[in-house]
Picture 1: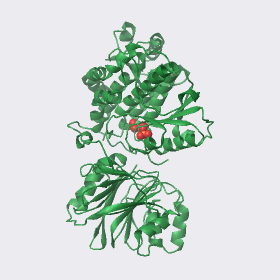
Picture 2: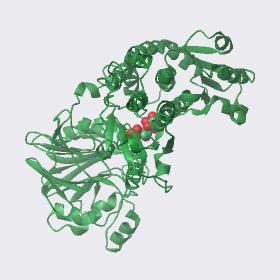
Picture 3: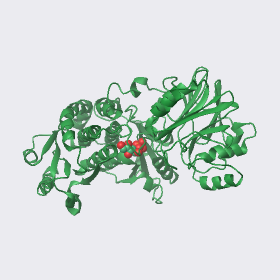
Picture 4: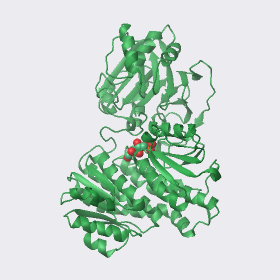
Length: 599
Ligand code: F6R
């Protein structure tokens, strides 16, 4: 949700900032801007739309500044426009800021500042930061930022500069910021990919940190001015991992990476007869599990409920993180709270985690991004190691999350003294190969996408573990193709949604063979009887489904616990190819951003 980068060094800042912004575009792409210090003046460019528009504008200039900040925006307060694009300035154009987060008391602060004579240009909450810093500026940017932040309520990743100080001052509260440490150059950014081309040595700022940066180095203090010692960590990410590698979109690349990401989440975690995880917990006291997450991660949480209840035998509650945090949940030290998050930065998930911990729950994170805030705040964690997920629509993180949940359930069962069935361990070992095989449906899905791209509504149906897969298939389609889609438990449609079924309603049915297949078959019959078109995901020649369905997508046969991982792959492909056939910007769907760091 908004990407920030700042630079202090020997090179032309503009090139480094634009390159960094492009790598942060997954965080927001409705407008972009940058500001450089040149001969004690602030030089600024802003453009509406993707970073490419800003790049074009900047390329025509000969910008020599070596200190600068830049921002790619996901609008919260104020429409996408040049005026609302960051950086924002004080009245005298001496101070510039870029901000990620929400200033909750901005109205009150704005009124105060206006009454003191400040003139505002934008509708954003962020602009108050620039004016507030101006209010306190008496020759030291560090001091002014510290004083300004004392009045601010809300969340921020903030970087500020002043025309006559060759430095950056950054601060973090609930929105991520990292410092990149180079040779005679220092970077600050929302995320590692922005600076990976320049350095792998990073410092993760923590809430309450203030960083003062110049080309020679940096200091980190708390808001009371006390110097803090934060470790420099070497990130294990390569440039190759964050490139498209010949794929048209990151989303397609990430769908095709699933054999590898599944291999990564399993690596070193399966032995001959058990699962190896290193968890720091008091398992014996846990009487209930609560899982909270958002979006796609919430869908894997629902699958986790089925798996954990069946395999571990403990009650599991699943919550939307955004609801959990505000509903005064009943939580005790006998609960294990699991936060699932690809980014590890989702504001609602983080707040739910903090709420649960404050009420005494033990916590566990299932997270992809190493070093992210959720990963740092939980008592124990399982990293997905799925590699960077850059496409806004989550794909490989989802299948890795389900795999991690299954590993957790089996691990726990073994800890409780039960043998783990060799068959499931064996199937887990072969999961990457099976995912590879599933991707062979690709060309068939391309044809289906051509056929169905102009339909305006879709239904997705599944039962048991595959009901959340239906939800996920529908979410994938709506978020990137803007086609209305709903997921339902297959049996539920007769309680209302079946009224929508006619020849204009394609219905995707997860019909892989399991205990409930006959029941799903009846649901297919009900749809056919009303003229609906059925696209069935099947795993073997199940004649009755074959006879009834209009289109079949065949996936390999797997244990039912693994079926969500395999069954979702053709649904990801279907959503992708429909959106692509419609000529849409798959990696940058409208109104969305990858890392949702605001409420
Ligand atoms: C959908 C999608 C979102 C995220 C959600 C949570 O494709 O990507 O629904 O799943 O915003 O994000 P994380 O998992 O980073 O907490």
